[in-house]
Amino acid sequence: MTITCVSPIDGSVYATRETLSHADADAAVARAKAAQSDWAARSLAERIELVQAGVAAVGAMNDDIVPEIAHQMGRPVRYGGEFGGFNERATYMASIAQDALADIEIEDSDAFRRVIKRVPHGVVLVVAPWNYPYMTAINTVAPALIAGNAVMLKHASQTPLVGERMAAAFHSAGIPKDVFQNIFLDHQTTSDLIADRAFGFVNFTGSVGGGEAMERAAAGTFTGVGLELGGKDPGYVMEDADLDAAVDTLIDGAMFNAGQCCCGIERIYVAESLFDAFVEKAVKVVNGYTLGNPLDHETTLGPMAHVRFANEVRAQIAEAVADGATAHIATFAQDDGGAYLTPQILTNVTHNMRVMRDESFGPVVGIMSVKDDKEAIRLMNDSDFGLTASLWTEDTVRAETIADQIETGTVFMNRADYLDPALCWTGCKNTGRGGGLSVIGYHNLTRPKSYHLKKA
Image (cartoon, rainbow, N blue to C red; front, top):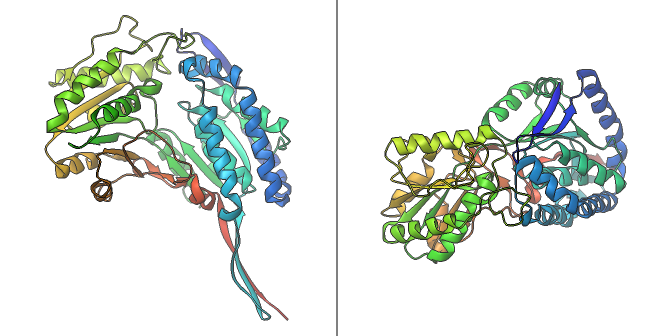
């Protein structure tokens, strides 16, 4: 089977790769398992040093990586790629590794030594998405390697060059080739490997349907599966909010990367007293975008990664308008009816509309007026998803009180669309389960092992 990346820039084939046969995939897993024990036997300090060197090697490639990302998934080159966040996350996880992986000593007396250690799962499969292809991958790759696991990275077919870049960088830094492997697999081979207990842990970031397939494959194997799936993240602007800051941040959170962000803002609830002003300012911001070729430094909004993604957003918008929603943005001249899509702001929306319920994952946001916190909480929770929520107020106590009542993985106050590596990246409901980054990320990438040693 061949994996093909069609560039959203012009619809041309940008890269093709052959997937591994089942036999070759089995052989790759066997090499990873054979290499993992020696890797885990190295000192933690050495593993940290090698991973950090691999991260730096990725950074040295950034001038080539940035246009590659534009070709593969459409993000404008003016934003400079992902190395800032990539490095921040890896560096933080390296900095906490010693404490996060430290033994828990219960007793070391003349009679007993009792201790709990954290040991690696063995081989970790990382299935990474295309929307932030470097940052999403490093969330698991760095801590998994530091913890002593071997890692096999299967990247999205839209961004096939990313895994190759990471493998080349990490290998050049001295991480053994069998310890970190970039692999191309079809869906069936991936499922078969999971069902055959090829991996000690699987981390998947992608669609709800993809997550369901991972769980079905792992059923009965007792393989740990971490899932970050869909999102429909809300923002709530209270009457005491800094209006300009709320508009700038929430609309950027909705539209940046053509709306293709795991924790992007997809619905906004605004206190009645601020609603009209919020919408007016939001429309002005969006009308200031330049839609175009992502290789052009003047472009602020590139195409969506694939025509089919843009068509889904168009369908949601058209259905909403047909049901009474108001579209505030006139069609941009650069909108080609394909991957290049006009960003859109909708009002007069309801939760009966798909645009307010289904994941859009594109440059569209619905905005509703709310009369009080109770109504806002009800609407924020009226979703099948729970990744992040963004609250805008000057009152920290009020924000935390509301946050306690929201069904979500992360709550922001006066910011949005950011992943803090010191905090657990997690979700609930159809967003999935598990947790990455932070000390909890290390706990999920290892297992506890108890030692009860009676001394003679």
